[in-house]
Length: 156
Image (cartoon, rainbow, N blue to C red):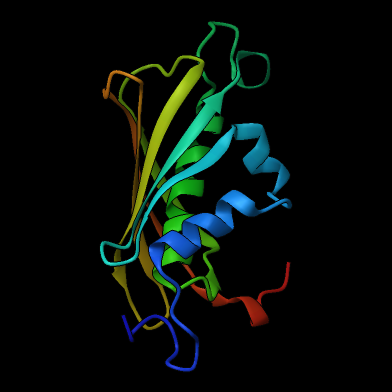
């Protein structure tokens, strides 16, 4: 993956990256609201698997389903974290554009998200994400274009 991470950065194993996520005490408030929990990391596949605890008291619309904007946030989280992992944890992934398709209603409870980097170019990265219910049914899909930005140059 020399096209992603610089050669002077010490490579982290998948297990070390996963441990970093699990040990973090400063998860962003948006991630906490979504019930984000990292499950699996694969740098070789440029892919992550994430669990979300979709709480009814925080994320539901009047019909008792997870509101679509929260599903978009979950998908964005999966794809951006996949980019961070693909970079060897050296870059963030601000989203430039995102397209989401909703395939079936998402109900509160456990949801599984998968994010992957499809292409890492010189200035942009292309990502895909999916959300699944506990029975493994596909709920929503997204694709995005992002701007990989080294942590040291990132300004909010």
